[in-house]
Image 1 (tube, rainbow, N blue to C red):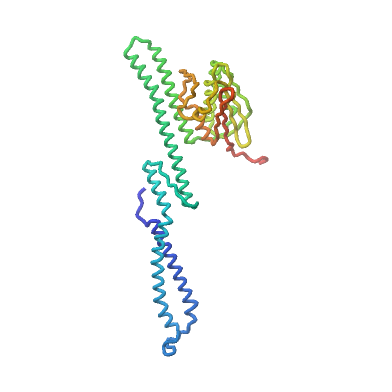
Image 2 (cartoon, rainbow, N blue to C red; image 1 turned 90 degrees about the vertical axis):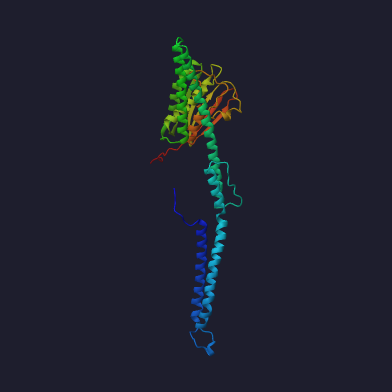
Length: 366
């Protein structure tokens, strides 16, 4: 937005300082006039014309007072300009950092030294903001690169299948169409997952009362067929667990956790336990699965986008895009909760989600 020209903050502070000093000097001279000259006799003749009187004192005092006022004005302007420059020097550094950030240099920091005051608090807050923005931008760039790579794969497969079908009209068209449908379904699922991840990251959803135990039962019922086909026993335990959030996002969160637990439950014949409970100040969801041991150094990377566990069996039906736990992390963060992943001693993984209670319940007896 274009603005009209105006005085700088340094000039405003300088004029304010000089004006305050001049007014203070004028008040001091007024006090001298009121409480000193008024008691001097008004005898313009005096003894031989040289005795102390108001006339002589006024003629002597007025030029000196005018000179003092001029000196105060000059001193106020010069001193105010110097002091304002020193006071505004931190703002100059912060402005330079803001302009550098606006031009794309997010690595620049103010890093102001000295004791804590308002300017240093502002500089520290600005540095913290730049660190968060730089981290977020780097994450988004990495995510965009991974997303483009993941989307390019099914598109390239589709193009190859179409080229093969065009060069060989007598080939098995049903097999090509079936393969195209599988690849297209995976691309659609990946696109929907990306949109869901973006939506949960923005946090622009309507919050409502949700029973997390019913959400867990719905997710388990949806994946029961998959669990039975893989020989996995799926159990849901726990009582009513009320929380507040997006029912759609919470359902996707639980579904991703249960599906991840079922798919990673190798060899066949393992168990997946989903437990919900209400605790003081929030709700808790635990998804625990058996399986092969999970390396501890792999656990912190599981929630990264497009990161897949090394033990996943790739199938056309549930090949996955590496966004399952990334979406879970995003949904949990959007609900101001915490996500903990802990390897089980006997193999498998224990995932714990804690969501704080943000409901506004009426007081008892209200």
